[in-house]
Amino acid sequence: MNSTEKNPTGTHPTKAAAARDVLAVVSQSGPSVTFFDAVTYERLDVLEVPAQPHELLFDADRRLLYCVSTYVSGYYNAHQGRARSVTVIDPDTRTIVDTLDTAPDHAPHGIALDRARARLYVSVEATDTAPGGVIVYDAQTRERIGRIPVMADGPHWFAITPDGRRGYSTNKEAPFVSVVDLESQEFTGRIEVPGSEGLDVSPDGRYLYVAAPKGDFHTPPAAQPGVRVIDIAKGEVVRTLPTEGVVFPVHTTATGAVLAGELRVAVEPGSVLGKQTDGVLHVFAPGTHRPVGQVEVGRFPLTITSSPDGSVGYVSNVMSSTVTVVDLERMEVITTLTVDRAGEAGAHGLAYVPAAQD
Image 1 (cartoon, rainbow, N blue to C red):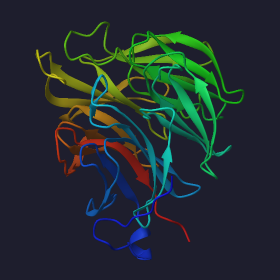
Image 2: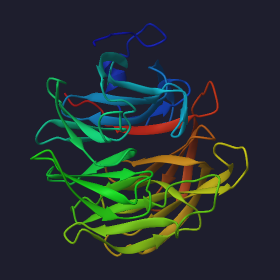
Image 3: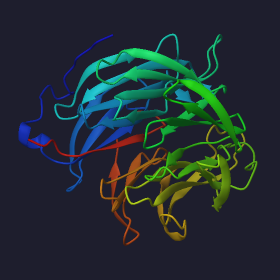
């Protein structure tokens, strides 16, 4: 299905306005994507998108943003129906240029791009007839060209190796990370970890970092919280980077530093997400995984990204509806951005969009 619309102001940004680095931020209950100047942090624009947007991905080759809408409303395991759209956005004009319908699949969430092969991967939850999986799109034509099963019901985040040959999905309920061969489009194995949340691959393709165990706001963690470090060649966990509370987002910078967002939450009967207090950003050194430091962020850090040079980190905090901007060299908060929200859930997906080059 195709659709085109203007931003809420009815205007299009000028060419000069597009010639700047921009941070795009999802407001989950907005539902919207807010654009900030990545240097001055000025709010530039707000674009309305379909309900319950979760994650964002920037395609530098086609200068497009992909925004997945996961549920009609609510959260994982506490929602009022699964959505099935991926909104395609021009970040320079800040307009919607296309909408991909994932039917018969639903609840798209994890999203990754193989630039060399122009392949877009979107994780989806199980249906009545198929296990959870990953939809494969041709990024040039935006046509669906395949589906890879991950043999788990609730794949949520998805990441690929730098060479584009292997992909990994974390699975909320299943006690393993799924491994898929992206060339043959086949499920190839499991790596044992407790039910898991976010993940990322090191820039050199040596390590896979997985947040585990999964967040459970009704009982204490099922295992030591932290980031599991998986040696990709061995296909096994080689160490854990421990944290006090559960971790949801994991991100590796261009320099190989590992960023992890720890939740600080107390179990609260009857509450969907527990009693949240300010979370913590942990930073671990490239290669050695030595703790570099930590910075306090907002409530329920849910997504992390960084600047192209790896010097600045961005942490979206869904319960605060803020983005904490962190100087990763000084380990200091630069500023906090506020994202409007219409309901309980706020800032979620993030994408750094470098300025268009002439």
